[in-house]
Amino acid sequence: MSESKMSSMKKEYEFLKEIGLGSRNLGCYINGLWQGNGPVISSVNPANNQRIAEVVEASFQDYEEGMRACAEAAKIWMQIPAPKRGEIVRQLGDALRAKLHYLGRLVSLEMGKILAEGIGEVQEIIDMCDFAVGLSRQLNGSIIPSERPNHIMLETWNPLGIVGVITAFNFPCAVLGWNACIALVCGNCVVWKGAPTTPLITIAMTKIVAGVLEKNNLPGAILTTFCGGAEIGQAIAEDTRIPLVSFTGSTKVGLMVQQIVNQRFGKSLLELSGNNAIIVMDDADTELAVRSVLFAAVGTAGQRCTTCRRLLLHENIYHKVLERLLDVYKQVKIGNPLEKGTLLGPLHTRASRENFEKGIQKIKSQGGKILTGGNVIESEGNFVHPTIVEISPNADVVKEELFGPLLYVMKFQSLKEAIEINNSVPQGLSSSIFTRKPEIIFKWIGPQGSDCGIVNVNIPTNGAEIGGAFGGEKATGGGREAGSDSWKQYMRRSTCTINYGNELPLAQGINFG
Ligand code: NAD
Image (cartoon, rainbow, N blue to C red):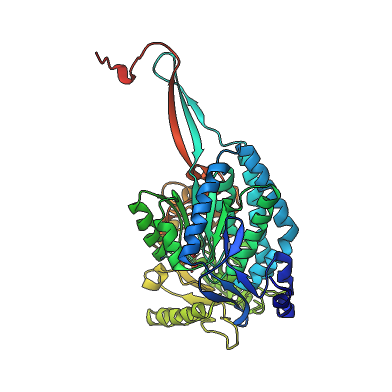
């Protein structure tokens, strides 16, 4: 980046220099070098819709060049012992720690989430690095007793080669972290395409990884990054050099990606849309529930996959909880996400704001009663009011994910009815119940309880820890990322039977000649 380009940056954006960004940035990291021969786009601040900086996206030639280098790097990386790969990821964690506040600020600036959440997002990758370092010494296979004398059966795990990672705008770097930290210690190279509206985060994050690879004399192509849109995403989905495509985004696009990857017998790992409910029973600590609903419904301006969109209140506490919630909604400070005290920042783009407006019209046409909010805020940014709507659980709109600070409230009479409503939507990501009764808790987490991938008790639907496997069922795609045994998806399993005797006994006692 030339000095003159740097000096043309607005003062409020000068911190970007600390993470290697300028007013015009090349958007492809290919074979250890930065380039870009595709369209030039602007990264826009959602709080005022003004340009932050320009980015040159990838062309198809860039893509091809990058993939060739990545395939070569894969041959080297998979041969490095796993704990040594872990050491590289440990260094990545340290490099992120050193830039935590700058990166967090950039997430807040470009995506629009409040600063605390921006910093939290980067912290999540640091946590993932720590997790992956430990994992690098625990990619254990097993020894299985053989039915044949002088035979031994082993299960071993080998790298896949290259993992493609396509990510959504709302977690512009954490999702890369969930995937890349695990994929890397498992011995895979990573090809990343971030969201087209968050290219600066994609570039800044890649620069941090690139610095660590360079310091260790490793090929830069171990992480290959392309800024771009649907065309580059589609190229990743179609590419037979990429055995696993991890896709995070909407159900609509995820389904298309899955079908393309399936056609070539690739594997896909899908993290798609949510439509998450909180159930409050009549024995619950209602103050705890209200605080949780506020964070789950208003946090990240309702743009988390785990955002609470449906609040199911027992009829005995319906009015009490609703009144308290309407009261706390009045106190939510809306404004610049970088300013202290702001709880609700803007929606990510102008299009998201228009979508919100259209959604409200649809809700009204289906009998929804707006209890608070329900409109956009006239300003140069993409701000909307946090909204609560009273509606029937059977309305069609309730089955869809409207990405904004919109909460549907519904009344129920019994636990059975509440669980039925919870499970009645196509998506199956997150869910939570507020109760103190053990019999309700165990029913909720059991076979006739919530059908979601995340089943919480007395906490919000969002804010998952990285130690557990993260993901959801049904139209959320069935993928699991981050902790627990999610790593197995990033490796291929070999079942090895070794005969160390001189005879050839066959399985199932077969005597063949
Ligand atoms: P999106 O589906 O519009 O885009 C996601 C990514 O797919 C982007 O990088 C985009 O460029 C790319 N893409 C678009 N068309 C493509 C195509 N034809 N082929 C390949 N790639 C293509 O989603 P979004 O608006 O960025 O993100 C919001 C959605 O993501 C919400 O539905 C949210 O619930 C979901 N999400 C889910 C999780 C999860 O873990 N379940 C996490 C974050 C976001």
